[in-house]
Amino acid sequence: MDVIGQKYFTTIDFVLFALLLVASMVIGLYYALSGGRQRTTQEFLLADRSMKCLPLSLSLMASFQSAVAIVGTPAEVYTNGTQYWFIGCSYILGLLIPAHVFIPVFYRLHLSSAYQYLELRFCKTVRICGTVTFIFQMVIYMGVGVYTPALALNAVTGFHLWGAVLATGLVCTVYTTLGGLKAVIWTDVFQTLVMFAGQLAVVIVGVQQVGGLSNFWRKVREGDRISSIDLNPDPTVRHTFWTLALGGVFLMLSLYGVNQAQVQRYLSSRTEKEAVMSCYMVFPCLQIALGLSCLMGLVMFACYGDNSSLNKQFLTSKDQMVLYFVMDMLQDFPGLPGLFVACLFSASLSTISSAFNSLATVTMEDLIKPHCPSMTEARATLLSKILAFSYGLICLAMAYVVHLMNSSVLQAALSIFGMIGGPLLGLFCLGIFFPWANSTGAVTGLVAGLVMAFWVGIGGFLTQMPISVTMHSQNCTDTVATENITMATVTAILTPVTDKPSKPVGLHGLYSLSYMWYSALNSSVVVLVGLIVSFLTGPMKEQDLTRGTVYPLVEKIHSFLQMLAKPKPCLGSSPEHRQIPVRHDQMNGVANTEKNTEMEEERGTFLPVSQISCLEQETAV
Image 1 (tube, rainbow, N blue to C red):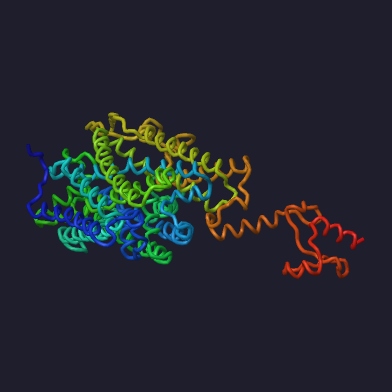
Image 2 (image 1 turned 60 degrees about the horizontal axis):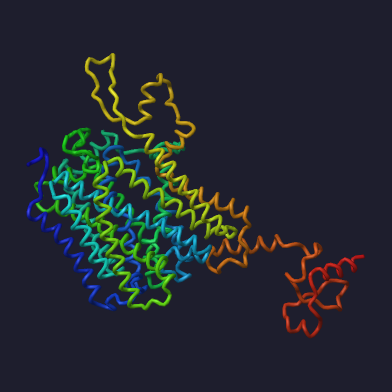
């Protein structure tokens, strides 16, 4: 039965969509049958540490540019203007800090999993806690990442929902299992090109549809969709310059600094310099992707104006607007809808394949290998492939679970993905930047950060759940239709009108915190609680630190402070802690120390610092 307003694929659209899946599968088969044929865990999980910076940078970008971003960013710009574009400012620090802090630390330790660092820096318990938290995060997101684009495609085009889910999940599972990380990276490169081509084609054709660049610019200006810089420092405002540019830095650090999917790509590069360069090169790629997404939103507004597609009964979410626009305005261009759908599913495939591979890596390296040290390389590689395949099946199961949820719970699942990244960022920052932090502080801080994340996230979600109200106006003859509004809107209606809107206070103010600050808040809680508990239980001593687990500059500062904190000679330091060479035949009573120990053994003897202090005092008298 046809749905009013629903559009359908032509033959060429189906062909283009099928070609994307076939090409991704071929890349996986190629790397399964060439080179080392994925016979070692080094090749399967880390691509033999042989990748160059260009494919790495495109793969890093593709992993970040999920299908949710492809459909969500244009809808955001269409609805609220270009304020969201300022998140691009956060990319500067969000990529410079990983390039010069996290990559050097991880790469020089020769890790396979980011969570190996936690055991080297703290203990095995902290490593397991970090690994389990990451697995929980990615398993939730896998189902959302596969189901969301399939649902949008089904609602707008009538494309079979579970056909799209199975096609995405199974193809991604097969080429990830067969080709390993090399297949994942090179399919990301191919899929990135498809993404750019699909978005660029929609922007060019859309501008032509509205009458050229001049008409396009005039309509978006008249529609007030070109946002100025909002310097409001209020953290409860959803999108401001500070919220996006500063809060976004912490979000970027959680993705590009400590997320296993990205760290694994850094570790697969040939050299540390290549890894750093890939981080630099991903910056223009992300800016291009963000710019194209924002342009798509503006083109949609230029075509539709304020006549939102959401007013049409067959659209239930703004995430479906982009696909509806492609099918509605561009239906006279055969193949273009299929190209954009291929672009959309390319983003989904790249994100999900990264999740499969990173989950297999952390499970193998952090949970299985430590308990099976005698496992042969062949068996470990086979088990890694089985793990990747198993996570693919779990992804399909999670997609079905998401299907049983309503749209509000779907948004909650996406929020959970963002909330967990903050505490993990805080845990790594605690280890890298604070040499005094100990294992007890790390575990306590992580638990506190997760509690804060779920408290604020779920509290904010429940506070802003839509409720139905009927509003009547005495100045109008018509009754305003019942609509969904947030609790904040209800409060504003019931409160007498004032010159300034009331600002949320107390817990409501905390629950009203912009989602862009979640990562900053949660990571800060981990660091603060971790440091307090560490000092209360006894800070970690310098000699207990594993060399290379603290950022080099911080390590030097820590050593300098330790030297300053040591007691002066006159305070009588214990001889067993420190002894320096000294000659008995002192000139004017001054202790004469020598650098050469062998020469000192011939000329004098080693005296404790306390005795040196006594000699100095006697000489002074």
